[in-house]
Length: 470
Ligand SMILES: *[C@@H]1O[C@H](CO)[C@@H](O)[C@H](O)[C@H]1NC(C)=O
Ligand SMILES: *[C@@H]1O[C@H](CO)[C@@H](O)[C@H](O)[C@H]1NC(C)=O
Image (cartoon, rainbow, N blue to C red; front, top):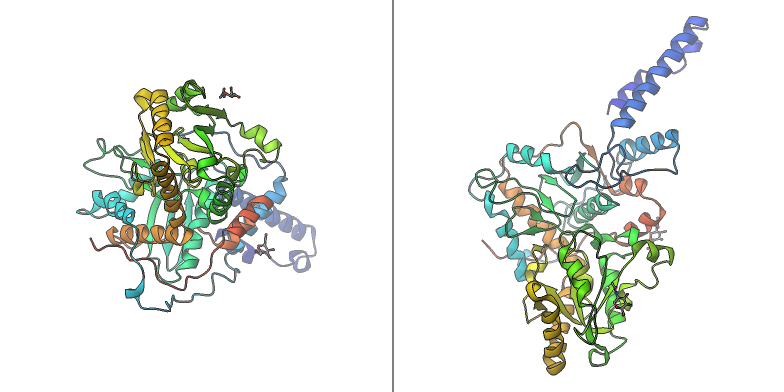
């Protein structure tokens, strides 16, 4: 905003008005001041790409660099994308109210696991969420999301690793596009790093509402769909609807019976995860019925991700899921394979994993007795192939039913229930900036833009699914 008032004050042609040395000096001074001001604004503007933001202090990661740009082109880009794009963007002007083709009564019931939304928000049921709650949560947040009148405003505090912030914000913008006029005003704090931080035991008297990608039974953090549903461009993981379809096709190349009758895990064991380290000991196909492979993402990138393709990793009857530094985005891809998913007793939960039922759509593995427990599952399945195959299929069906429609519905209901608890009227803070579809695209590099484009949505023809009344 500062920018525009400065521009207007700039004399259009001062050297014409004062054709003198003084005039020229004045002009250079104004120009200098203007440049200085612009520079100042630019260097203080946090962006969806991570400009001018430090990594989160509670989870440090390498500082982002924007090496391809000169200082000038970077300044131009920040002004263009952050301050000008949304003003002139066509999409923000079409303020169409949502009109469902059918009445609300016809919308289907939400999946059972949506009831977790109410459990997650239970701590604020009696007190509501005050401005102080949100302000306190800011201390552990990377950014603040304020939605007012269907427009999105973001206040940046810290950078997020890779393109998490960009794809998360994109997801929220798509939700606004999907249900125009339906998403209520909200004001919420978001942290984009892996580990939950709001311990129940420490915050009983004054619970802090903080959104992130996962939580645990001991934490109050509110789980929200992770960025990879809209794509993870750095490691070539496609937006969810395409990625699921791709894995499903891949999984059908060999029938379950004809898959290798063993357990398989492929991932990065070097993420400070004790369980993944221990898993390396189970790498013995004859003794433990398991193959454990190291995924080197650097190497995979150099080879164009051909061998790491998720659709080519459904060749074993059993697939192991092991948590990483916290929860792992890999759960959804593993379940999508239609193999029996062996989940090593998880500590973390994400928004959808609350819908998983042991022996129904996955198999629980005991971390205390890891390798024998894997072996036992493999032996059981090979002796009961019909039942094992059915567990695998139900896991895949569960992921298929979790399509993008349901994910937007989950986000919609979560934000709606959250907004009902707010004790104040959300207003964008003066330090925030509007973020719109075009401004995110404006900051995206070519590869990211391709992913964003592919996960772009449009206004829904039907209302969100119906959440069971409280
Ligand atoms: C596990 O064993 C296989 C076969 O012996 C080997 O190729 C692979 O590198 C081993 N995995 C790890 C993580 O050492
Ligand atoms: C986005 O996708 C559409 C078709 O799906 C294509 O025509 C368009 O060029 C794409 N835009 C970008 C920026 O990739």
